[in-house]
Image 1 (cartoon, rainbow, N blue to C red):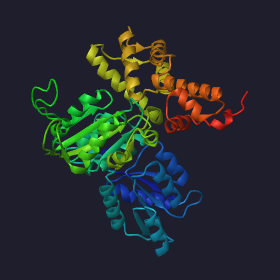
Image 2 (tube, one colour):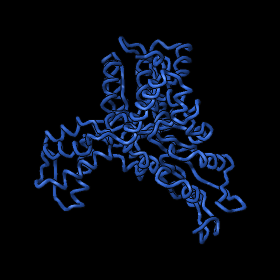
Image 3 (spheres, rainbow, N blue to C red):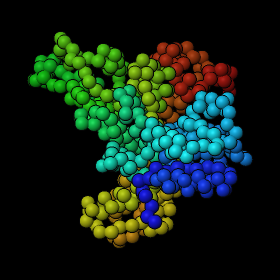
Image 4 (spheres, rainbow, N blue to C red):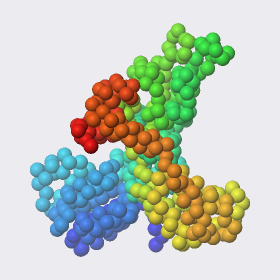
Length: 455
């Protein structure tokens, strides 16, 4: 019999082998794909390999019981629904289970039709069913994500749930992990999909131009403003506005952005009247926004406006099982672009790719694959080219931010040694006020007291 790839997937857990087999047969006959597990330990191991659409588990089991399994599922897959079955049901048990977030609770002997109905309802309400089982397939919203990682699948499921609302989304994640790709996917899965998606990198545009780009300007507002210009808030009407690297936005513009979000109106530079806005806000940063807030570089009130829901994009190192999949995907694209025919990596070369640290994430992986394709003279890419590409993509010279942070710490240490921990004197030498100087010391976890009477 051919496997039905569109069937909802159930992880079925019970320590009674006979009941497990009987229930599996019933669920398979109802159109589900069933993965049986003989206990909580085996179920958690299976979850690390593949992600089902729902977990149906017995409550009383040796070792990891049903509620302990639920806790494990909730930690690693927070949107995955769990239904608990037990012959020892009681109202207090049911109340406790539902309060902790269990989707459903059925006592044995249970009605098979009721169980099937509850499974369907859980999958429908949680949105965990694969989009491929929808007529016409609405999986296109996430088509640019190439993954088989349970971590990434669960993350995308969270994104899908968020996309169905109008809340502002704040995307965190390391550089190169795919934050803009995620923003576009959320837009495609939202009710605004037919509207425009407009994005801007807040750190790539000077402050004077960024204000005009965001809010627009009228003719004559400043030198060079020869005509009216719609800002991005107006260009994105009815759609989504994506502000990338929001952590780099100057404080003065943060104030103006907050006013626009609160009043739902935008006033172009030089204009005397405001215009209504209609956009869904998505923002992103790779910076430590919490540190920026504590240091006064990012406004708390704006942060809470933008961060209604926070999504943390997994780093490539957290989903290494995707590396061969992504590598082959990039190989196919590059082979077509450069008309190279069939390309593949030597087994040792692929092992090296899987084991690499990937600080630059998916963007870095693409860079390495493209470099090896460009330099390879054979259809099988050797280990030597991969080793060279990874080494060149991680030069020995440190990043600018790391160098600046190291210099700043060393400079502060020298000042504190010179002044023997006298903060007022050190601040005067550095030409900074005491409050700012204390903030710098706190950032580097430097305690002035340890420098008093130091040799």
